[in-house]
Length: 129
Image 1: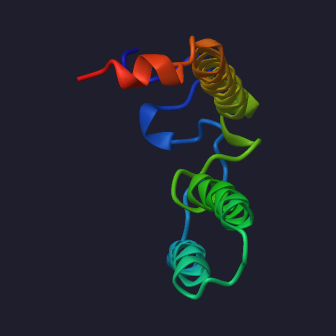
Image 2: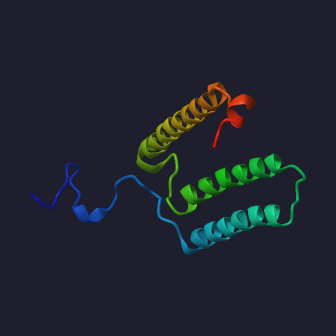
Image 3: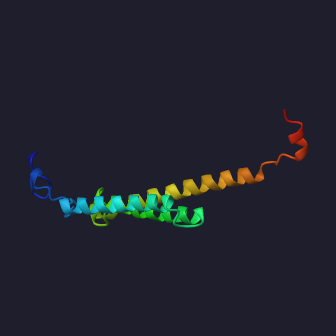
């Protein structure tokens, strides 16, 4: 009785509904090549001074980082909408929402603390040791 599950199969069947979640060597090599390319591009952008303005370089690097996160999730973590009936993807989306809320809130608070601090006047600067 201990070797069978509710549907009558044994524990050794490994048919838990996660069809195709394991990658092949080709999948790992593809993920590795994409990850290397997505790592080299930001170095080239910075070292080659491709963009005149630093904030454009930063935005492009952040976009490439987001793409690289997706590559890692698909090729190495095997996170797809089919895995576990979509619950792992839903948990990831919830985690990302919490992360965005926390980061945005922290940046907002720090910006307003900096903007609303009492500025030091020229008179006070003369009296400092």
